[in-house]
Amino acid sequence: EVQLVESGGGLVQPGGSLRLSCAASGFTFSTYWMHWVRQAPGKGLVWVSRINSDGSSRTYADSVKGRFTISRDNTKNTLYLQMNSLRAEDTAVYYCARGTTGTYGGAFDIWGQGTMVTVSS
Amino acid sequence: QPVLTQSSSASASLGSSVKLTCTLSSGHSTYIIAWHQQQPGKAPRFLMKVEGSGSYNKGSGVPDRFSGSSSGADRYLTISNLQSEDEADYYCETWDSNTHVFGTGTKVTVL
Image (cartoon, rainbow over the protein chains, first blue to last red):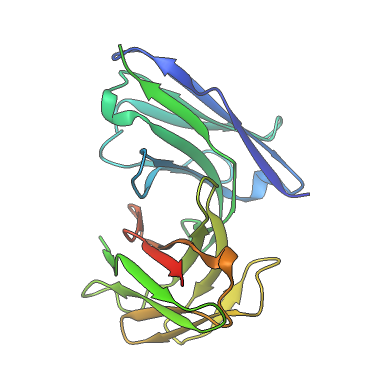
């Protein structure tokens, strides 16, 4: 079964750090672009970051640039999101997603179940 | 960067059809978009991608009731024979070299 499973969410104080993980199974992880997408409570979907299949290209939304780092370990079939200098506005459910189309891996065809990140004192 | 515009809500009766619209911003009318469904309390689910030509490719297990089409800068998602489980938020998605964007979502209510 093709599957993405996120972990690592939780409660963190403003200014703190957290690392999210996304374990992939059921497909050849090393051949796909991968993404992080977040959704604040009661709000819509917002793209956060993407990484290409071999990890050589990374792109970020302006709202997280310089604070978040996306990475992957193709030997472990795992995607990561290192989140530093966290702010209250980073509070959201974080989803990992597989990208399928075009040069930049658009059209996310597999989504994880999400992991909740709460930034609060 | 592209911007996607969606109506905030739509409603239709059980067993009828509803057509959702996602409009691409000026200069981006040829872009491919994807449609995603998010049922209450669940993760998003990929439904299909729709090209400017009107051709569409559905995800695995997506019922035949769901179809896509296109006209100019508009991309459509049509749900036929509406079922109670179709009550959900529907988001369109597109991308370019610098970013990926989502529409604000359309909440579909089944009457």
